[in-house]
Image (cartoon, rainbow, N blue to C red; front, side, top):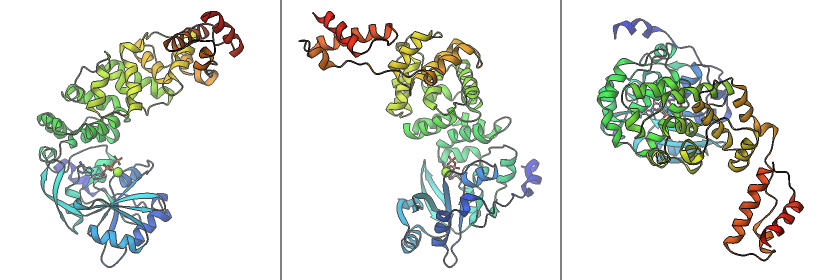
Length: 417
Ligand code: ATP
Ligand code: MG
């Protein structure tokens, strides 16, 4: 890698004084592990994001202490310690309600997919080499000094997401790294995605089949809402991976329009909505995707909005929009509008669609004033009750939700007698 040799010397700045380092709970974890020769550093996402000026939400730590030792030191310091993945070196410590994943430095000696045989080490560079991308192999000690054994900072600063070592070898150790490559490229990459990473991903794409739905779903959710979501999804498509992952035909133009609309409206954090536009066309697409990506029930209720069953997709006029808001609820309604908007091909600054999206801010759906017992009191039973209620509700919606309970009771009496 001669062209990168010179920027290897680009020294990362210190993170001294960063609030996430100074917090009492972070310091408590460092204190607990500060005995003898033990060295402990923050690693991965926290350091990477801090160097980019992004918020740090969770912290992974790397330590030279072996896992049983970490457990003992934590107990001694009265911190809660959970042996989350103690066989591969990971213990979760909880200080004042915040969890920290603490993993003993290790080198991978043999790998069977994600189940690596591990050997613990006290060599920081060995630990760095078993990580995935250079920009994830950055460490910071409690004083904020950054350690960069593999030149990850230069890559981070220049938006290069590159595998550590040989991309193919690294992917064969864990096929999830294919999706992590696209995910991190869509978050932290600038410019084109790394050529070696792309070639290795294409060559080994059959390995994706070995991954669990949960792991694939976890990565896909994040790619769908990445800052460069469209580039990430388009690259997965261009290199032949997306169709395999989704098991259907993606619709990139609609997806690109949804991203643009959401960016304009500052609403970009719903992966299920993006997936609905990208990959749900016929109703059958939704259950297949839900299974392939292990989606939650809440996510599935957004996903089905992409199918035919969710009805018309043109710009709804006010009464129809109110009915939709009433029927779908405030949680789902915006997704319905955004999906229809993207499919309609209207631009992100379209006033009509903007007004439909903003309906919940100017109108709150009332609750239907009648219940089953009201119909039962009129002497009806069984399925007749539901039928009458539905009819009354439909007319009530058609009349603009205007009638109150008294008026509806009069109408109900007339209907059942
Ligand atoms: P984020 O938490 O934002 O997803 P992260 O970098 O912290 O980013 P994690 O999945 O929490 O990512 O993993 C922490 C670190 O562990 C990574 O930065 C990387 O160094 C290493 N790592 C995680 N998963 C893998 C993997 N599949 N292969 C190699 N290294 C990995
Ligand atoms: Mg992390």
